[in-house]
Image (cartoon, rainbow over all chains, first blue to last red):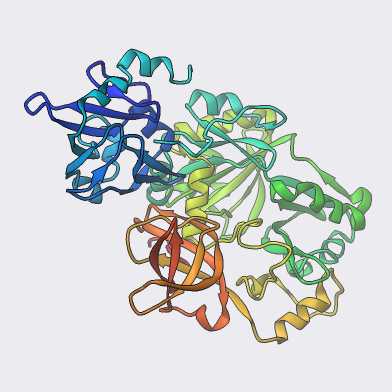
Length: 133
Length: 376
């Protein structure tokens, strides 16, 4: 993708992660990295993600993503228990580049504290803090 | 996610390529390298890497310094400051060589081209250009000149590179054998070509006047060459196990421990800088060797990571043995690869070690070079 896609229906962090609350199960959320993040990283070749049952804490490092040119830490937008990890990324890490908001999702978590969602950015606020091109 | 890289640097104080506008139009991302602002990637490092391995890519390598030595006695002057006996290189041939210091350490690695009429072209790494030219000028004086800004240098690499270069430049290119060099007439424009490169693939390098460079770039890209940046150049050269000066070789490493003994001639009598030390190094048992490491699990090796011996469970033991001089994810092998100087007894294919990847012990195995050999 081109690096400038910011879907309106997601929540964001200033560290370039996104969070999508599950419509059917509102206490669950999917987490990934943004189009801007994948574009800055370049070709993603390896992800180190937490397994199911791991507790991640909002603002803390939960894994890392390696591209050909660099490695970056991943930070959890909110606190919660990991209920799924995207196993497709093991063989196809490039899904993070091709579809950062879709097939390239990273983890699903059970939301521990709903009030933490209020601390995240909406699409407009996230767009506003991206560097202007 | 914290983005650690600095993909787009400022332009302050950096030298700009003559074809800058072409690169910008292609959406290049630029990065500073050895005082130049260079295209790091266009479409993406992996796509560009695969284009070079599978068909053909073109790199703007105009940052490489182009120094000439001209006139009678040029070969002997060059020989007095470089390690390979260039007086044995016939007209129309190129050879790899080194500048060494008095201790036998490698100050730069270079390609030397012998052209007609006592003309010699020496390609210097950009980071060492001033020091290298100083070495040449110290012995060749007015016979030496550096002519980098006036020209553009393009590397065309890949299994379809020779076919493309022949269709663009004419049959004169097809007549060249590996490491041949010649000046061709491209519709009235002189183009210096050589069947050389730095990717492990077949191909050629072209030097053309800056005013005609855009036309040549366009002819090559319209002819099917994928523009490729420094990112892919690095993964390609590392897969081919070609050392990068400043990373894998420098003034503290000597050619016999770096696998570059073939670039040192000692069986003549000619004096040259570093000769005595090199003769001694050659006779001494090696204490260390540049070794080639392949990760045994998913993970990326990077320059500067520590290398350890391991215990029974693969855990890292003791102080680091050494650090990686180069490392990357190999797009062709889909695994981490790297180089490091290892104690000679460990620099043997099959030896298992571990690299400290930010606290994780990533198992690696020493392999024979290269990591990747061109197909067919």
